[in-house]
Structure formats: structure tokens, C-alpha cells
Length: 255
Figure 1 (cartoon, one colour):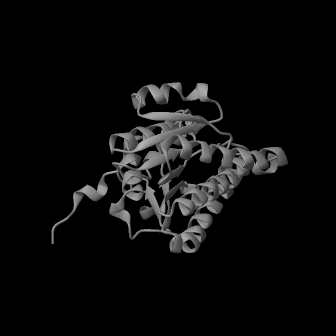
Figure 2: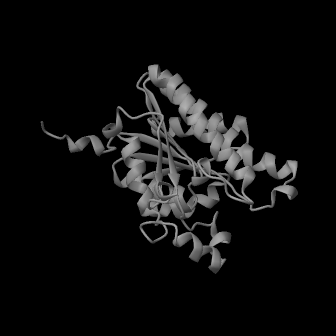
């Protein structure tokens, strides 16, 4: 048997990455372009995407989209599809977190996190699936879950609830949309220092304690997520749907 390595290529594929102004979304967008894809990147403001566009070297287009707004999800996905001439890949990365003791969580905070991380992800996926069904070629949707999809983290209850829900959504949509040729998978980043999680790493004692729990003995680098995202977006994973792939240095395997 000969292994067809071209199946890892994203040449000719058209992708939308939400929450791509920085951090994980920006890194994945760059990786998809380097793998051959045309990429649309989104954030609440196009102005916030200028650095990402610069790093994409002219190979990307920007779409303004607040994923907490259901109508904006549909409009943004359609705008991306129009700009790219179709849509093969959605990376549902947009998210937010705010550390808060559970006894102090307000309804406003709960709604803001769940509307962004879970409701927004669903309606972006729904809009993308409608485009993929209309075009008749299927596609790949990749949801950015979290270690909190699997473990409880104090002071992160709204965030953990949203990410646990996102994992359930991944599995349900994978089962429902398989006949449409649409695969739905998820990544579970471990401990990566980004603008979203920076507050944790500012605590030296916390960082030392967490590092001791990671078998590979280091925190993640953004590049560590790119290969997994490319694989799950490519034809190399054509028979993979409904999975949760931790990218965590062995953390979950060791607890």
C-alpha cells in the first residue's frame, strides 16, 4: 500500500476561522494558509484582524462577525463563503473567559460566556453546514473545546459549562450531519498561554503546580495545535468524525 501524503494538503480548500485576531485562531489561520487553503478570518471588528491579515501575506480575507449575535453568524459565514467562492472548513475558535468564583457569577456573565462559546459556535456551525449542503460537497467543522470539557476547574464554571456543552454539540452534530458529508470534530487545548488565559499564568504558584502535572513537562506552544487542526480539516481524516482530540502534553492521560 502507498500512503497518499497529498491527503494532508489543504490546496483548493476554503476555510473560515472565527476569533482569529490573535492567539490560537491566528495561529491556526496561518497554518491553514501554509497548508494551501484560502482563509477568511473573523472577529468582532475588521480592524482587529489587521495583524492576522499581515501575517497571512495577502492570502486571507477579513469578515466582521460577533458570534454572540445569531444573525451576525449567518451573515458572516455567508460573507466568507461569498468572498472565497464556497466553504469547506469552519474552525469554531471564537471564545471568551472570565475567572469568577461561582457564588459571584451573575446572569450577565453567564449569558455573555455561553452566548459566545456555545450558542455562537452552534449558529456558526449551522450556517456553515447550510452552505456546505447547498454546495453539495460536504466539509469539515472543527470546534475548539478545552480541558474543561472533561475536567472541573474552580472559578471557571460558566466557561467549563460552555466547553462541556460544545463537546456534546460536536458529537451530536457529527452523528446528524454525517449523511451530508460534513464531519464535526473538536480539539481540546491543554495549558496554552494566550491573552484569554494569561491571568492564570501570572500566578507563579499556579503555573508551577500545573507544569508538574503535565507529562511532557512544558506548556503548549501555539504551533502544537496547528498540525492537529490541519489533520482534522484535511482529507487525511476523512473517516474521523465526532472525536475530541486533547492537545495537552499528556495531562488528561495522567490524571
